[in-house]
Image 1 (cartoon, rainbow, N blue to C red):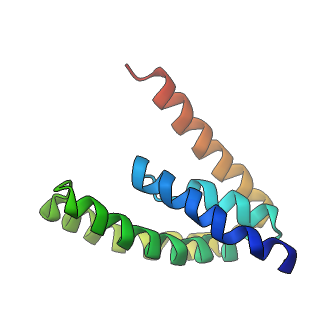
Image 2: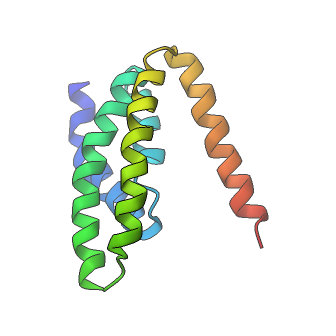
Image 3: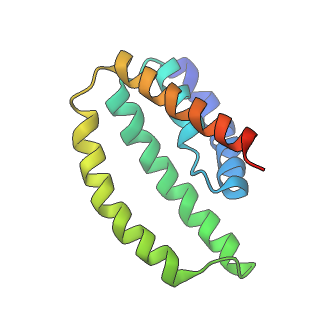
Length: 119
């Protein structure tokens, strides 16, 4: 894993650009990368969330300067997300890394098809 650590800063830069540009949070890039580097599904998700927290704060500051933040809607979504995050964290503990990879791939594929076909 030490050999991959030098890649983490430039990968973080790319993920930060993608997250701030698309609003997807970066996990769609970071989790597969961590899985490729040998992290378990659970460790990949948890580590990704720490990085996403840091990236999100930075992106929020940048978008706030551009007046692109609706704080009321964001707070309401965030409150719902707190509940969902607690449920999701417990669910991922009960799935193998192999099964997680399949579920994650299906979610990404479904999102890609939806975005491609949406007019």
